Length: 204
Image 1 (spheres, rainbow, N blue to C red):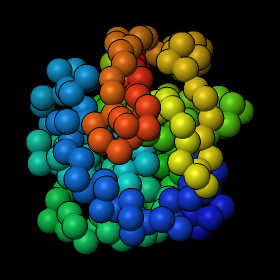
Image 2 (cartoon, rainbow, N blue to C red):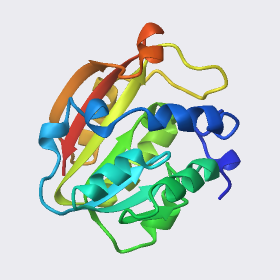
Image 3 (cartoon, one colour):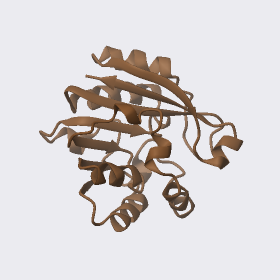
């Protein structure tokens, strides 16, 4: 599936060069500080949906997890595979809401991360996506999500999605809320623009 056909990827392939440099300057621990105390400490099967250039996936792999990195934008996948060639990461070209490639596999996950992705999906797409994500979670597994709030960059497809709406949707699929919190952007450019984030963690 080409990234140009994937809902929510508008504006990413066109600005890949600039964005790759920005992504590489954000560390996992800085970004995930609001939820890092909940992440599994034993080796786990992890799915990173919207993995970008793979910084998060590489950190998780370095912590002993078996990581599948899902990324529909070809330029990001290529950059990630090159930058993290030695990491224990499987790269997959798939996308929300359908997750057609992963949905056809028998694999289930202990942790699924959907960071800086959800607000790119329209309401009907979010409903479909949550149902498909829930099917990939093992019993007792964890879903970590982040939602962007603030002005949208030009050319991006971004919807105003609240933590409350996302929690209500997750509960429809028998996911239990563990944590909901707010945090400022770790990128100075975004903070100055008034961008903040909701972090939400669910358990199946």
